[in-house]
Length: 209
Image (cartoon, rainbow, N blue to C red; front, side, top):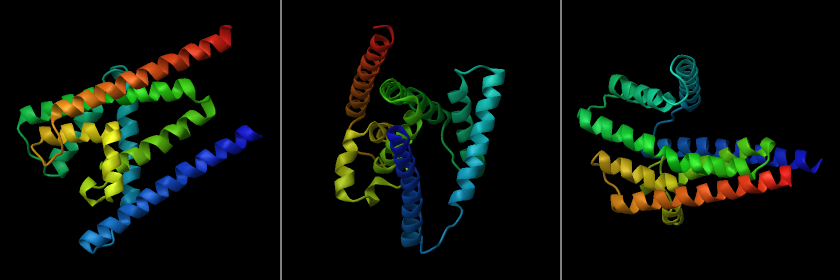
């Protein structure tokens, strides 16, 4: 009974957080552009279908490892075809390498959560962590528009450091040196990997005594 209650609380927090982020997006766009943009849901749905199709296709044709390469190439292609993004090919390659390498600390974080949380609560817990982290790191809304308290706390989030490295590669305005952000991501990776190892060891001890 208690497990079910906790699970429903986590599901409610996750759903409420998603609604809150969409509402903030509406507010920001209306406040800046003075235009009510109601296509958030349609964009999210189309993106989900495209992402799922690419993942399933790549898994069935070329295996699991190249999934990220396929998805990044698809994003780059859509940006060039429909978003009018024009960059030198060296910049495309640099940004792609950053995105692929940037998966490492988040994979370590996922392993840590998976080894500590129960199977029923791991997935909602990941969403509760990742969605607010993406928002507070300036991935959804430019960090310059966030309150000062959120901007100062962003330095403790791995997504913030990865975004700043990507902005540097694009010669866009960014904060801090690349070496600082790389060291921060390396530190996050080691911490999460250690937590995952400890969680896995604890699980094995419980299972095998």
